[in-house]
Image 1 (tube, rainbow, N blue to C red):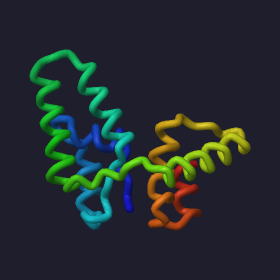
Image 2: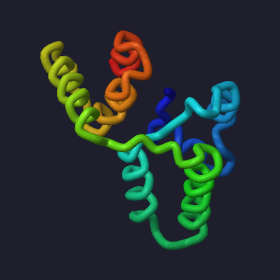
Image 3: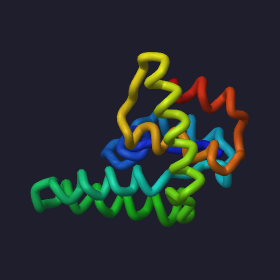
Image 4: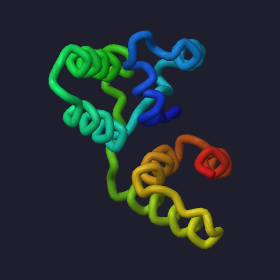
Length: 127
C-alpha cells in the first residue's frame, strides 16, 4: 500500500501538475495507491478557505477527479486500529525526542494498522 499524503495530492491538482509526481505515480501498481481520510480533510479544508473563483473551482474539480478516477475511491478510513498504531508511533517518536504533527502521524500509521507493509519500512518512511 502506498499512501499519498497532502503534498502529493496537492501537486497533482495544480495546473500544470507536478511532472515528477505524475511520472512516479505512473510507475506504481494502481491498486496499491491510496490516500487517507486525513488527507481528504486537509485538502477539502484548503479548498474551503480559498476565495471563490476559477482557481478554487478548478482545484476542486481536479481533486474530485483524482479521488474518483485516479484513486478509484481508495481512501483508507481512520479506525480504532489506526488510532492504536498512531498512539504507538507518536509515543515512540516522543521518547526519541522526535515528535511530529498529529495528522502526519495519523497518515503514517494508516498502512501499519492494516498490516500491509513491513513495520520497519513504515517506521523508516515515517521518521
